[in-house]
Length: 325
Image 1 (cartoon, rainbow, N blue to C red):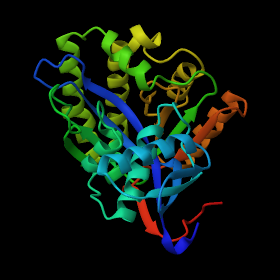
Image 2: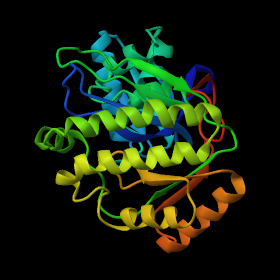
Image 3: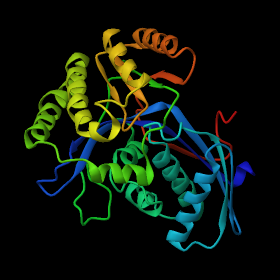
């Protein structure tokens, strides 16, 4: 691939911290909280061709399908050559599909001179139909609150707020080996089967978010933020228990959530359907210590990442991508 004619996109994973409303009594369903993290991440390189789509690297088949969908959506004459240099673990609760789809869309939009707004990218590759956390995290980084969708709407859910996460806070993400989380049609069917939660529980989640979690985030109060986040996870996890087998998906991830809390993490939980779980701590020293304990618990299996939070959205550039090896 000629570097002079290529575009690269580097995008971090996203954590999904919880759904705001499964009832939809006010006309909108879902809504949610989440954040962008720099690791694990994907790195994609793309070049325009005269026709056809080819792709190489991990998740190459999905990347090629997203490219075909994007080009068909815009009626573009031409093709693309893609190389996925690095990928986010698939079906693990880290938003790999959305980050890959949006990365392909953004790269091709740059190459073909097409719209690059987040909603335009998501629509072209059919992402963000339920949750917009991944879309806004891709575009902006930081901590995201989105407001859910009305049933008749085709666009992505509106961004309610984007907040900086204190730079010293650290996040440890562990992805145990084993069964992947729900995605695609299986996820859609699971959502349809979920019973609506009690109105009081939906109200409690909103109260925690508005009056404890967000003020604590803005003031840099990790203890208050973690307490609220853990409470939201317990409440919303119970909503999903009929389909995932418990407040957290059974297995090593569920055990790690309990362990990380006991090891001093201020806030703990499961991202989306898992199996990825996370723990928040105050600084890099605590982050490294927590990550080491998670690796020991997993016996060297799975994946453990320790980092701060992404302070911006996906990185886009021309030419050879940095760190592709």
